[in-house]
Image (tube, rainbow, N blue to C red):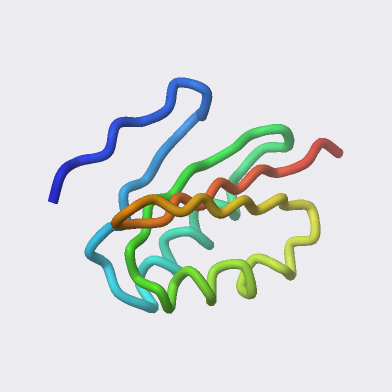
Length: 84
């Protein structure tokens, strides 16, 4: 599968394509845990179960904005920690 190019507007990107649940969820939760206010992380996933479960897992944080962008063969999940 072709490697996706990072967007220069984003601080970080993690390619989780090919991973199946629960691994993408664990990777994202771990990365989000250490995020500073005002930063964004991008994750690429292709597991439909991860797409459904990740927003549910991140609800408890309360200070995150989650955007899901659909691409032809994967989804891009952008997680932004809002300012204090």
